[in-house]
Image 1 (cartoon, rainbow, N blue to C red):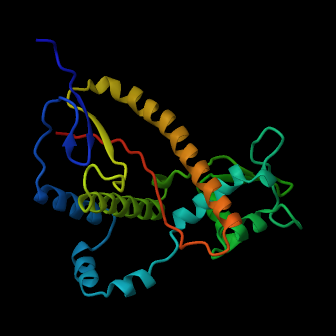
Image 2: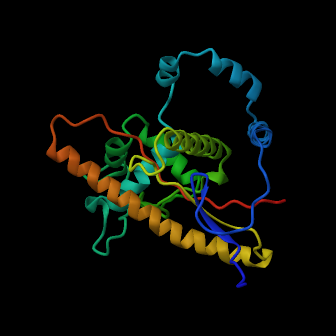
Amino acid sequence: MPNRRKRAVRQNSTKVACAPLRREITVDDVIKDLLDLFSYLGLDAGRLASRVANLDPAALAAGRLYPHASAIGELLRAWHQDPEYLDDSGLPSPIKMHTRRRSFRVLADKTVPDMNPGTLLRELERIGAVTIDSNGHIRVHMRSIPVYEDKHLAIQHTLLSLDGFIRTLRHNLNSAASNSDQLFHRVAWNGDLDPGELPALKIRVKRHAQGFLESCDNWMTGRSESSMRKSKNRRKPLQVSVGVYLSIDAN
């Protein structure tokens, strides 16, 4: 018999390619991992659970704030996409804090109006996303932020990712597997990867995922702006995210 490649691509929980079975994961394993994660983040999971269980869903929704990490990401995205803020090569132009037309304050007010521009600039400078030269020009150095270099951003990003992943699975469980209403969910896994290949895999995922996510971001931004121009009675917008992750089972 020919050797079977020890790899699979999964949609939801349905195996679509032959592969050795992964180790069994129980509900207790997942709950323990979540409790360990919350403990590591400095969150009291017991108090959180009891408080949320007693809250009305409307009260939960009303208490949500615009995520800090999302605010920073919105500004970086706009700086890399808005033609008014690009140079002749299509790269983000250096800008000053205050000018009449093209300035950091104008960009901040346009993309994240609920956040103070000065606070936003200090945060971007602190995490290395921008630098300010002696002439006051602000230069951007990244399109996406390294959230895991800052504990506050890391906590927000982790909770947002967990919440989004759970919502995707809940949505797919409530619709037929062949239904076009299913949200995209695929996982490629390998049960026999040489540890020495991990650095190359990380580079591969980082390189290809960044381009893929930026293309999705550009497409969604273009559609959003087009919809706003075309319709006066625009439907309530959706919050949508597309993510890529790499996980390693230490066992």
